[in-house]
Image (cartoon, rainbow, N blue to C red; front, side, top):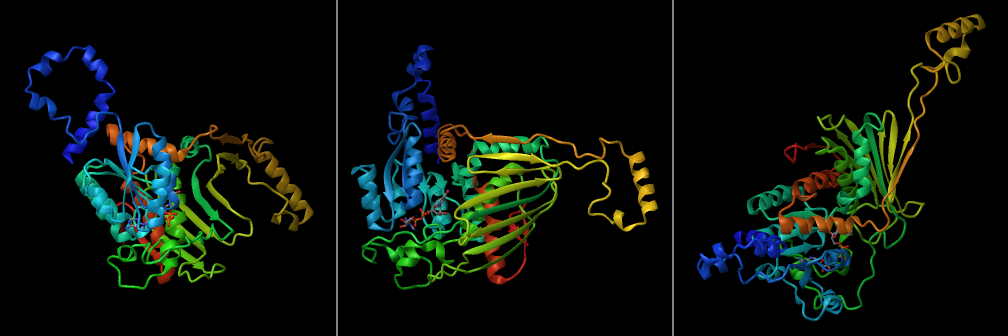
Amino acid sequence: MKTNSTRRKFIKQLGGTSLLLAAGPFKSLASETSENRAMPFSPRISPNDKIRVATIGLGIMGNVDTDSALKVPGVELVAACDLYNGRLARAKEKYGNNIFTTRDYREILNRKDIDAVIIATADLWHARIAIDAMNAGKAVYCEKPVVQKISDGLPVIAAQKKTGKPMQVGSQRVSSIVYRKAKELYKTGEIGQLNCVEASFDRQDALGAWEYTMPTDGSPTTVDWDRYIEGMAKMPWDPKKFFWWRNYKDFGTGVAGDLFVHLLSGIHLITDSIGPKVIFASGQLCYWKDGRDVPDIMTGIMQYPETKEHPAFQLMLRVNFVSGQGEKGVTRFVGNEGVIEMLDNGFTITHSLMSKAPGIGGWDAFDTYPKAMQEELMKEYNKKYTADQQKRPVKPPINYTAPENYDEHLEHFKNFFDGVRDNKPLVEGPEFAFRAAAPTLACNDSYFQKKIINWDPLNMKVV
Ligand SMILES: NC(=O)c1ccc[n+]([C@@H]2O[C@H](COP(=O)([O-])OP(=O)(O)OC[C@H]3O[C@@H](n4cnc5c(N)ncnc54)[C@H](O)[C@@H]3O)[C@@H](O)[C@H]2O)c1
Protein backbone atom coordinates (compact mmCIF):
# COMPACT_ATOMS: atom_id res chain seq x y z
CA MET A 1 0.00 0.00 0.00
CA LYS A 2 2.79 2.36 1.02
CA THR A 3 4.84 1.45 -2.03
CA ASN A 4 1.98 2.23 -4.35
CA SER A 5 1.28 5.63 -2.88
CA THR A 6 4.99 6.31 -3.23
CA ARG A 7 4.68 5.27 -6.83
CA ARG A 8 1.82 7.72 -7.35
CA LYS A 9 3.94 10.48 -5.88
CA PHE A 10 6.82 9.38 -8.07
CA ILE A 11 4.74 9.47 -11.23
CA LYS A 12 3.55 12.95 -10.27
CA GLN A 13 7.10 14.10 -9.58
CA LEU A 14 8.34 12.86 -12.92
CA GLY A 15 6.38 15.57 -14.69
CA GLY A 16 8.36 18.17 -12.75
CA THR A 17 11.79 16.54 -13.04
CA SER A 18 13.34 19.14 -15.34
CA LEU A 19 12.04 21.91 -13.11
CA LEU A 20 13.48 20.19 -10.09
CA LEU A 21 16.88 19.83 -11.74
CA ALA A 22 16.86 23.42 -12.96
CA ALA A 23 16.21 24.54 -9.41
CA GLY A 24 19.47 22.88 -8.48
CA PRO A 25 18.59 20.38 -5.77
CA PHE A 26 21.89 18.52 -6.28
CA LYS A 27 23.34 19.69 -3.00
CA SER A 28 20.58 18.17 -0.91
CA LEU A 29 20.62 14.95 -2.94
CA ALA A 30 24.38 14.71 -2.64
CA SER A 31 24.11 14.88 1.11
CA GLU A 32 22.00 11.67 1.16
CA THR A 33 23.46 8.21 0.98
CA SER A 34 22.92 6.43 -2.32
CA GLU A 35 20.67 3.95 -0.51
CA ASN A 36 18.37 6.71 0.70
CA ARG A 37 18.26 8.28 -2.70
CA ALA A 38 17.25 4.97 -4.27
CA MET A 39 14.35 4.42 -1.91
CA PRO A 40 11.60 6.33 -3.67
CA PHE A 41 12.67 4.80 -6.97
CA SER A 42 11.72 1.24 -6.06
CA PRO A 43 12.45 -1.35 -8.78
CA ARG A 44 8.74 -1.96 -9.43
CA ILE A 45 8.39 1.56 -10.74
CA SER A 46 9.14 1.86 -14.39
CA PRO A 47 11.40 4.79 -15.22
CA ASN A 48 8.74 6.35 -17.42
CA ASP A 49 5.33 7.83 -16.84
CA LYS A 50 3.30 4.63 -17.33
CA ILE A 51 0.42 3.34 -15.28
CA ARG A 52 0.41 -0.42 -15.75
CA VAL A 53 -3.03 -1.94 -15.99
CA ALA A 54 -4.58 -5.40 -16.17
CA THR A 55 -8.13 -6.20 -17.23
CA ILE A 56 -10.05 -8.94 -15.45
CA GLY A 57 -12.99 -10.07 -17.57
CA LEU A 58 -12.47 -9.47 -21.28
CA GLY A 59 -15.97 -9.82 -22.65
CA ILE A 60 -17.78 -6.98 -24.36
CA MET A 61 -17.28 -4.32 -21.70
CA GLY A 62 -13.79 -5.44 -20.72
CA ASN A 63 -12.75 -4.73 -24.30
CA VAL A 64 -14.56 -1.40 -24.40
CA ASP A 65 -13.08 -0.38 -21.04
CA THR A 66 -9.57 -1.44 -22.02
CA ASP A 67 -9.79 0.48 -25.29
CA SER A 68 -10.89 3.63 -23.44
CA ALA A 69 -8.24 3.21 -20.74
CA LEU A 70 -5.53 2.91 -23.40
CA LYS A 71 -6.58 6.23 -24.92
CA VAL A 72 -5.44 7.94 -21.72
CA PRO A 73 -1.81 8.98 -22.14
CA GLY A 74 0.64 6.95 -20.09
CA VAL A 75 -1.55 3.89 -19.63
CA GLU A 76 -0.27 0.48 -20.66
CA LEU A 77 -2.00 -2.92 -20.64
CA VAL A 78 0.28 -5.61 -19.28
CA ALA A 79 -2.05 -8.48 -18.42
CA ALA A 80 -5.48 -9.92 -19.00
CA CYS A 81 -7.56 -12.46 -17.13
CA ASP A 82 -10.64 -14.30 -18.28
CA LEU A 83 -12.27 -17.66 -17.66
CA TYR A 84 -12.79 -18.42 -21.35
CA ASN A 85 -9.72 -19.27 -23.45
CA GLY A 86 -11.15 -17.65 -26.60
CA ARG A 87 -11.17 -14.27 -24.90
CA LEU A 88 -7.58 -14.63 -23.74
CA ALA A 89 -6.56 -15.57 -27.29
CA ARG A 90 -8.41 -12.53 -28.58
CA ALA A 91 -6.72 -10.30 -25.99
CA LYS A 92 -3.31 -11.38 -27.32
CA GLU A 93 -4.45 -10.83 -30.92
CA LYS A 94 -5.71 -7.37 -30.07
CA TYR A 95 -3.30 -6.06 -27.43
CA GLY A 96 -0.11 -7.93 -28.32
CA ASN A 97 1.42 -11.33 -27.76
CA ASN A 98 3.54 -10.05 -24.93
CA ILE A 99 0.67 -9.45 -22.50
CA PHE A 100 0.45 -11.93 -19.64
CA THR A 101 -2.79 -13.94 -19.65
CA THR A 102 -4.35 -16.15 -17.02
CA ARG A 103 -7.65 -17.66 -15.92
CA ASP A 104 -6.88 -16.90 -12.27
CA TYR A 105 -7.23 -13.25 -11.25
CA ARG A 106 -5.08 -13.88 -8.17
CA GLU A 107 -2.09 -14.29 -10.48
CA ILE A 108 -2.76 -10.75 -11.69
CA LEU A 109 -3.05 -9.41 -8.16
CA ASN A 110 0.20 -11.11 -7.10
CA ARG A 111 2.18 -9.28 -9.77
CA LYS A 112 4.09 -6.34 -8.40
CA ASP A 113 4.28 -4.50 -11.74
CA ILE A 114 0.53 -3.84 -11.99
CA ASP A 115 -0.81 -0.58 -10.60
CA ALA A 116 -4.49 -0.82 -11.47
CA VAL A 117 -7.05 -3.42 -12.50
CA ILE A 118 -10.18 -3.03 -14.58
CA ILE A 119 -12.84 -5.45 -13.34
CA ALA A 120 -15.36 -6.22 -16.08
CA THR A 121 -16.49 -9.69 -15.12
CA ALA A 122 -20.06 -10.89 -14.74
CA ASP A 123 -21.66 -9.05 -11.79
CA LEU A 124 -21.28 -11.87 -9.25
CA TRP A 125 -17.50 -11.47 -9.18
CA HIS A 126 -17.23 -7.68 -8.80
CA ALA A 127 -17.12 -7.40 -5.01
CA ARG A 128 -14.78 -10.34 -4.41
CA ILE A 129 -12.22 -9.24 -6.98
CA ALA A 130 -12.44 -5.55 -6.01
CA ILE A 131 -11.80 -6.31 -2.32
CA ASP A 132 -8.93 -8.70 -3.11
CA ALA A 133 -7.43 -6.21 -5.56
CA MET A 134 -7.45 -3.28 -3.12
CA ASN A 135 -6.02 -5.50 -0.40
CA ALA A 136 -3.26 -6.42 -2.86
CA GLY A 137 -2.48 -2.72 -3.31
CA LYS A 138 -4.11 -2.19 -6.70
CA ALA A 139 -6.23 0.74 -7.76
CA VAL A 140 -9.58 -0.51 -9.05
CA TYR A 141 -11.88 0.46 -11.90
CA CYS A 142 -14.89 -1.80 -11.37
CA GLU A 143 -17.84 -2.07 -13.70
CA LYS A 144 -21.35 -1.32 -12.50
CA PRO A 145 -23.24 -2.48 -10.55
CA VAL A 146 -20.50 -2.32 -7.94
CA VAL A 147 -21.95 -5.39 -6.20
CA GLN A 148 -24.35 -8.17 -7.08
CA LYS A 149 -25.80 -8.42 -3.58
CA ILE A 150 -26.71 -5.63 -1.19
CA SER A 151 -24.83 -7.46 1.57
CA ASP A 152 -21.56 -6.98 -0.36
CA GLY A 153 -21.76 -3.18 -0.49
CA LEU A 154 -20.46 -2.19 2.93
CA PRO A 155 -17.51 -4.65 2.79
CA VAL A 156 -16.37 -3.11 -0.52
CA ILE A 157 -16.63 0.40 0.95
CA ALA A 158 -14.75 -0.74 4.06
CA ALA A 159 -11.97 -2.30 1.96
CA GLN A 160 -11.54 0.93 0.02
CA LYS A 161 -11.41 2.97 3.22
CA LYS A 162 -8.97 0.57 4.87
CA THR A 163 -6.56 0.38 1.94
CA GLY A 164 -6.98 3.97 0.71
CA LYS A 165 -6.71 2.66 -2.85
CA PRO A 166 -8.47 4.66 -5.59
CA MET A 167 -11.67 2.90 -6.67
CA GLN A 168 -13.85 4.14 -9.50
CA VAL A 169 -17.07 2.40 -10.51
CA GLY A 170 -17.97 2.28 -14.17
CA SER A 171 -21.22 4.22 -14.55
CA GLN A 172 -19.75 6.61 -17.08
CA ARG A 173 -22.89 8.77 -17.03
CA VAL A 174 -21.44 10.29 -13.87
CA SER A 175 -18.73 11.84 -16.08
CA SER A 176 -21.18 13.08 -18.68
CA ILE A 177 -20.88 16.75 -19.56
CA VAL A 178 -24.59 16.64 -20.46
CA TYR A 179 -25.54 15.59 -16.92
CA ARG A 180 -23.21 18.19 -15.42
CA LYS A 181 -24.72 21.00 -17.53
CA ALA A 182 -28.24 19.84 -16.69
CA LYS A 183 -27.25 19.82 -13.02
CA GLU A 184 -26.12 23.45 -13.20
CA LEU A 185 -29.49 24.51 -14.58
CA TYR A 186 -31.44 22.28 -12.21
CA LYS A 187 -29.58 23.85 -9.27
CA THR A 188 -30.36 27.38 -10.41
CA GLY A 189 -34.07 26.54 -10.27
CA GLU A 190 -34.75 26.31 -14.00
CA ILE A 191 -37.59 23.79 -13.48
CA GLY A 192 -38.74 25.18 -10.14
CA GLN A 193 -39.19 22.61 -7.39
CA LEU A 194 -38.55 19.00 -8.41
CA ASN A 195 -41.41 16.63 -7.62
CA CYS A 196 -40.86 13.59 -9.79
CA VAL A 197 -38.38 11.83 -12.09
CA GLU A 198 -39.40 9.41 -14.84
CA ALA A 199 -36.68 7.29 -16.41
CA SER A 200 -36.67 4.40 -18.82
CA PHE A 201 -34.42 2.16 -20.91
CA ASP A 202 -36.27 0.38 -23.69
CA ARG A 203 -34.99 -2.15 -26.22
CA GLN A 204 -36.45 -4.47 -28.76
CA ASP A 205 -34.08 -7.03 -30.19
CA ALA A 206 -32.34 -10.23 -29.20
CA LEU A 207 -28.92 -8.66 -28.59
CA GLY A 208 -30.54 -5.89 -26.53
CA ALA A 209 -32.27 -8.63 -24.53
CA TRP A 210 -28.84 -10.14 -23.78
CA GLU A 211 -28.88 -13.09 -26.20
CA TYR A 212 -25.31 -12.47 -27.33
CA THR A 213 -23.53 -14.51 -30.01
CA MET A 214 -22.15 -17.71 -28.45
CA PRO A 215 -18.66 -18.94 -29.37
CA THR A 216 -18.36 -22.19 -31.34
CA ASP A 217 -16.13 -23.93 -28.80
CA GLY A 218 -17.64 -23.13 -25.38
CA SER A 219 -17.16 -26.18 -23.12
CA PRO A 220 -15.83 -27.03 -19.67
CA THR A 221 -12.42 -27.42 -21.36
CA THR A 222 -12.28 -23.95 -22.84
CA VAL A 223 -14.12 -22.36 -19.89
CA ASP A 224 -13.07 -22.52 -16.24
CA TRP A 225 -16.60 -23.32 -15.09
CA ASP A 226 -15.54 -24.53 -11.62
CA ARG A 227 -13.84 -21.22 -10.91
CA TYR A 228 -16.86 -19.33 -12.25
CA ILE A 229 -19.20 -21.02 -9.75
CA GLU A 230 -16.68 -20.99 -6.89
CA GLY A 231 -18.53 -20.54 -3.60
CA MET A 232 -21.86 -21.66 -5.09
CA ALA A 233 -23.59 -25.05 -4.96
CA LYS A 234 -22.15 -27.32 -7.65
CA MET A 235 -24.05 -27.16 -10.91
CA PRO A 236 -23.42 -28.70 -14.33
CA TRP A 237 -21.81 -26.70 -17.15
CA ASP A 238 -24.40 -24.48 -18.79
CA PRO A 239 -23.22 -22.25 -21.64
CA LYS A 240 -26.18 -19.94 -21.16
CA LYS A 241 -25.33 -19.34 -17.53
CA PHE A 242 -21.82 -18.47 -18.60
CA PHE A 243 -22.24 -16.51 -21.84
CA TRP A 244 -25.74 -15.16 -21.14
CA TRP A 245 -25.19 -14.75 -17.38
CA ARG A 246 -27.33 -11.57 -17.17
CA ASN A 247 -30.43 -13.72 -17.64
CA TYR A 248 -29.89 -15.61 -14.37
CA LYS A 249 -30.28 -14.11 -10.95
CA ASP A 250 -27.46 -16.25 -9.51
CA PHE A 251 -24.96 -14.50 -11.79
CA GLY A 252 -26.36 -11.14 -12.84
CA THR A 253 -28.67 -8.52 -11.41
CA GLY A 254 -31.51 -8.50 -13.95
CA VAL A 255 -32.70 -5.42 -15.76
CA ALA A 256 -32.74 -3.50 -12.48
CA GLY A 257 -29.08 -3.99 -11.50
CA ASP A 258 -27.95 -3.81 -15.10
CA LEU A 259 -29.89 -0.80 -16.38
CA PHE A 260 -31.80 0.96 -13.58
CA VAL A 261 -28.38 1.52 -12.04
CA HIS A 262 -27.33 3.80 -14.92
CA LEU A 263 -30.53 5.78 -14.44
CA LEU A 264 -30.01 6.16 -10.70
CA SER A 265 -26.37 7.20 -11.14
CA GLY A 266 -27.44 10.08 -13.38
CA ILE A 267 -30.36 11.04 -11.14
CA HIS A 268 -28.23 11.02 -7.99
CA LEU A 269 -25.58 13.09 -9.75
CA ILE A 270 -28.04 15.81 -10.73
CA THR A 271 -30.01 15.91 -7.50
CA ASP A 272 -27.10 15.22 -5.11
CA SER A 273 -29.34 12.58 -3.62
CA ILE A 274 -28.11 9.74 -1.45
CA GLY A 275 -31.08 7.55 -2.32
CA PRO A 276 -34.70 6.60 -1.78
CA LYS A 277 -36.42 5.43 1.38
CA VAL A 278 -39.11 3.23 -0.09
CA ILE A 279 -38.70 0.88 -3.06
CA PHE A 280 -41.24 -1.21 -4.91
CA ALA A 281 -40.96 -3.10 -8.19
CA SER A 282 -43.22 -5.12 -10.43
CA GLY A 283 -42.30 -7.08 -13.54
CA GLN A 284 -43.00 -9.95 -15.87
CA LEU A 285 -41.23 -12.25 -18.27
CA CYS A 286 -43.13 -11.44 -21.37
CA TYR A 287 -41.26 -12.38 -24.53
CA TRP A 288 -37.66 -13.58 -24.15
CA LYS A 289 -38.56 -17.01 -22.73
CA ASP A 290 -35.15 -18.57 -23.37
CA GLY A 291 -34.80 -20.17 -19.95
CA ARG A 292 -34.01 -16.93 -18.12
CA ASP A 293 -35.25 -16.46 -14.58
CA VAL A 294 -35.41 -12.66 -14.59
CA PRO A 295 -38.14 -10.44 -16.07
CA ASP A 296 -37.81 -8.70 -19.43
CA ILE A 297 -40.16 -5.89 -18.38
CA MET A 298 -39.82 -4.21 -15.04
CA THR A 299 -41.11 -1.07 -13.40
CA GLY A 300 -39.72 0.37 -10.21
CA ILE A 301 -41.16 3.03 -7.97
CA MET A 302 -39.07 4.79 -5.38
CA GLN A 303 -39.84 7.52 -2.88
CA TYR A 304 -37.06 9.99 -2.21
CA PRO A 305 -37.53 11.83 1.08
CA GLU A 306 -36.84 15.54 1.44
CA THR A 307 -33.22 16.28 2.36
CA LYS A 308 -31.27 19.49 2.52
CA GLU A 309 -30.10 18.75 -1.03
CA HIS A 310 -33.51 18.23 -2.65
CA PRO A 311 -37.28 18.24 -2.04
CA ALA A 312 -39.19 14.97 -1.69
CA PHE A 313 -39.76 13.37 -5.11
CA GLN A 314 -41.13 10.23 -6.72
CA LEU A 315 -39.00 8.14 -9.07
CA MET A 316 -40.60 5.95 -11.72
CA LEU A 317 -38.32 3.55 -13.60
CA ARG A 318 -38.98 1.22 -16.49
CA VAL A 319 -37.09 -1.24 -18.63
CA ASN A 320 -38.97 -2.91 -21.49
CA PHE A 321 -37.15 -5.37 -23.75
CA VAL A 322 -40.21 -5.70 -26.00
CA SER A 323 -40.72 -2.00 -26.35
CA GLY A 324 -42.61 -1.75 -29.63
CA GLN A 325 -40.49 1.30 -30.39
CA GLY A 326 -36.97 -0.06 -30.72
CA GLU A 327 -34.24 1.23 -28.45
CA LYS A 328 -35.04 4.38 -26.51
CA GLY A 329 -34.04 5.82 -23.17
CA VAL A 330 -35.54 8.81 -21.45
CA THR A 331 -34.92 10.55 -18.15
CA ARG A 332 -37.24 13.43 -17.27
CA PHE A 333 -36.88 15.66 -14.24
CA VAL A 334 -40.26 17.19 -13.52
CA GLY A 335 -40.56 20.39 -11.52
CA ASN A 336 -43.45 22.74 -10.84
CA GLU A 337 -42.16 25.16 -13.51
CA GLY A 338 -40.70 22.90 -16.19
CA VAL A 339 -39.15 19.63 -17.27
CA ILE A 340 -35.57 18.66 -18.07
CA GLU A 341 -35.58 15.87 -20.63
CA MET A 342 -32.26 14.11 -21.05
CA LEU A 343 -31.61 12.99 -24.61
CA ASP A 344 -28.88 10.80 -26.09
CA ASN A 345 -26.41 13.59 -26.51
CA GLY A 346 -27.95 16.58 -24.79
CA PHE A 347 -31.08 17.77 -23.06
CA THR A 348 -34.00 20.13 -23.47
CA ILE A 349 -35.71 22.18 -20.82
CA THR A 350 -39.29 23.24 -21.45
CA HIS A 351 -41.29 25.43 -19.11
CA SER A 352 -44.89 25.64 -18.09
CA LEU A 353 -45.57 28.24 -15.46
CA MET A 354 -48.90 28.60 -13.77
CA SER A 355 -50.84 31.87 -14.05
CA LYS A 356 -51.47 33.82 -10.85
CA ALA A 357 -55.22 33.63 -11.54
CA PRO A 358 -56.84 30.18 -11.14
CA GLY A 359 -58.77 30.41 -14.46
CA ILE A 360 -62.47 30.46 -15.14
CA GLY A 361 -64.64 28.83 -17.81
CA GLY A 362 -63.62 26.04 -20.17
CA TRP A 363 -63.59 22.66 -18.38
CA ASP A 364 -65.03 24.24 -15.27
CA ALA A 365 -68.27 24.26 -13.29
CA PHE A 366 -68.77 27.89 -14.46
CA ASP A 367 -71.03 27.01 -17.40
CA THR A 368 -73.37 24.94 -15.22
CA TYR A 369 -74.58 28.04 -13.30
CA PRO A 370 -77.39 30.41 -14.33
CA LYS A 371 -76.45 33.12 -16.81
CA ALA A 372 -76.78 35.99 -14.34
CA MET A 373 -74.51 34.21 -11.87
CA GLN A 374 -71.94 33.56 -14.62
CA GLU A 375 -71.89 37.28 -15.43
CA GLU A 376 -71.43 38.19 -11.79
CA LEU A 377 -68.63 35.61 -11.36
CA MET A 378 -66.85 36.86 -14.48
CA LYS A 379 -67.07 40.49 -13.32
CA GLU A 380 -65.61 39.58 -9.94
CA TYR A 381 -62.84 37.53 -11.54
CA ASN A 382 -61.78 40.33 -13.88
CA LYS A 383 -61.81 42.78 -11.01
CA LYS A 384 -59.64 40.50 -8.88
CA TYR A 385 -57.05 39.53 -11.53
CA THR A 386 -55.32 41.73 -14.12
CA ALA A 387 -55.04 40.54 -17.72
CA ASP A 388 -51.39 39.62 -17.09
CA GLN A 389 -52.27 37.63 -14.00
CA GLN A 390 -54.76 35.68 -16.06
CA LYS A 391 -52.06 34.55 -18.54
CA ARG A 392 -49.44 31.86 -18.06
CA PRO A 393 -45.99 33.49 -18.05
CA VAL A 394 -43.90 32.26 -20.96
CA LYS A 395 -40.25 31.23 -20.64
CA PRO A 396 -38.26 30.11 -23.69
CA PRO A 397 -37.02 26.52 -23.86
CA ILE A 398 -33.34 25.64 -23.46
CA ASN A 399 -31.51 23.11 -25.62
CA TYR A 400 -28.07 21.76 -24.92
CA THR A 401 -25.97 19.42 -27.07
CA ALA A 402 -22.66 17.96 -25.95
CA PRO A 403 -19.56 19.07 -27.87
CA GLU A 404 -18.79 16.87 -30.83
CA ASN A 405 -16.56 13.90 -29.98
CA TYR A 406 -17.17 14.30 -26.25
CA ASP A 407 -16.68 10.84 -24.77
CA GLU A 408 -17.99 10.40 -21.24
CA HIS A 409 -16.51 6.91 -21.00
CA LEU A 410 -13.05 8.28 -21.78
CA GLU A 411 -13.59 11.13 -19.30
CA HIS A 412 -14.53 8.59 -16.64
CA PHE A 413 -11.22 6.80 -17.22
CA LYS A 414 -9.25 10.06 -17.27
CA ASN A 415 -10.73 10.90 -13.89
CA PHE A 416 -9.78 7.42 -12.62
CA PHE A 417 -6.19 7.69 -13.79
CA ASP A 418 -5.92 11.22 -12.37
CA GLY A 419 -6.88 9.59 -9.09
CA VAL A 420 -4.24 6.92 -9.52
CA ARG A 421 -1.52 9.41 -10.48
CA ASP A 422 -2.28 12.43 -8.35
CA ASN A 423 -4.72 11.15 -5.76
CA LYS A 424 -7.36 13.48 -7.22
CA PRO A 425 -10.92 12.82 -6.00
CA LEU A 426 -12.84 10.28 -8.06
CA VAL A 427 -16.33 11.06 -9.32
CA GLU A 428 -17.70 7.59 -8.61
CA GLY A 429 -16.24 5.99 -5.53
CA PRO A 430 -17.81 2.89 -3.99
CA GLU A 431 -20.18 4.84 -1.73
CA PHE A 432 -21.76 6.80 -4.56
CA ALA A 433 -21.88 3.60 -6.61
CA PHE A 434 -23.44 1.52 -3.85
CA ARG A 435 -26.03 4.20 -3.15
CA ALA A 436 -27.02 3.98 -6.82
CA ALA A 437 -26.84 0.19 -7.01
CA ALA A 438 -28.48 -0.89 -3.76
CA PRO A 439 -31.96 0.52 -4.53
CA THR A 440 -31.88 -1.23 -7.92
CA LEU A 441 -30.91 -4.52 -6.27
CA ALA A 442 -33.75 -3.89 -3.82
CA CYS A 443 -36.06 -3.73 -6.88
CA ASN A 444 -35.14 -7.36 -7.53
CA ASP A 445 -35.85 -8.26 -3.91
CA SER A 446 -39.16 -6.41 -4.12
CA TYR A 447 -40.11 -8.23 -7.32
CA PHE A 448 -39.05 -11.72 -6.25
CA GLN A 449 -40.32 -11.44 -2.67
CA LYS A 450 -43.42 -9.42 -3.62
CA LYS A 451 -42.85 -6.79 -0.97
CA ILE A 452 -42.02 -3.15 -0.42
CA ILE A 453 -38.40 -2.59 0.63
CA ASN A 454 -37.54 0.13 3.14
CA TRP A 455 -34.04 1.47 2.67
CA ASP A 456 -31.88 3.63 4.91
CA PRO A 457 -29.91 5.65 2.35
CA LEU A 458 -27.65 7.30 4.92
CA ASN A 459 -26.41 4.11 6.55
CA MET A 460 -26.91 2.11 3.35
CA LYS A 461 -28.94 -0.64 5.00
CA VAL A 462 -32.26 -2.39 4.37
CA VAL A 463 -34.54 -1.46 7.26
N1 LIG B 1 -20.68 0.77 -18.03
C1 LIG B 1 -21.44 0.29 -19.00
O1 LIG B 1 -22.08 1.00 -19.77
C2 LIG B 1 -21.54 -1.20 -19.15
C3 LIG B 1 -21.99 -1.75 -20.35
C4 LIG B 1 -22.02 -3.14 -20.47
C5 LIG B 1 -21.63 -3.93 -19.41
N2 LIG B 1 -21.22 -3.37 -18.24
C6 LIG B 1 -20.81 -4.20 -17.10
O2 LIG B 1 -19.61 -4.87 -17.43
C7 LIG B 1 -19.57 -6.16 -16.87
C8 LIG B 1 -19.28 -7.19 -17.96
O3 LIG B 1 -20.34 -7.18 -18.90
P1 LIG B 1 -20.12 -7.79 -20.38
O4 LIG B 1 -21.27 -7.42 -21.19
O5 LIG B 1 -18.77 -7.42 -20.83
O6 LIG B 1 -20.17 -9.36 -20.06
P2 LIG B 1 -19.45 -10.51 -20.89
O7 LIG B 1 -20.17 -11.77 -20.56
O8 LIG B 1 -19.30 -10.12 -22.30
O9 LIG B 1 -18.00 -10.56 -20.25
C9 LIG B 1 -17.76 -10.97 -18.95
C10 LIG B 1 -16.43 -11.69 -18.93
O10 LIG B 1 -16.05 -11.91 -17.58
C11 LIG B 1 -15.37 -13.14 -17.52
N3 LIG B 1 -15.40 -13.61 -16.13
C12 LIG B 1 -16.47 -13.98 -15.38
N4 LIG B 1 -16.07 -14.31 -14.15
C13 LIG B 1 -14.72 -14.14 -14.12
C14 LIG B 1 -13.73 -14.32 -13.13
N5 LIG B 1 -14.02 -14.76 -11.92
N6 LIG B 1 -12.43 -14.06 -13.46
C15 LIG B 1 -12.12 -13.63 -14.69
N7 LIG B 1 -13.01 -13.44 -15.67
C16 LIG B 1 -14.29 -13.69 -15.39
C17 LIG B 1 -16.13 -14.04 -18.48
O11 LIG B 1 -15.32 -15.09 -18.91
C18 LIG B 1 -16.48 -13.07 -19.60
O12 LIG B 1 -15.54 -13.11 -20.64
C19 LIG B 1 -20.92 -6.36 -16.20
O13 LIG B 1 -20.80 -6.16 -14.82
C20 LIG B 1 -21.81 -5.30 -16.80
O14 LIG B 1 -22.82 -4.84 -15.93
C21 LIG B 1 -21.16 -2.02 -18.11
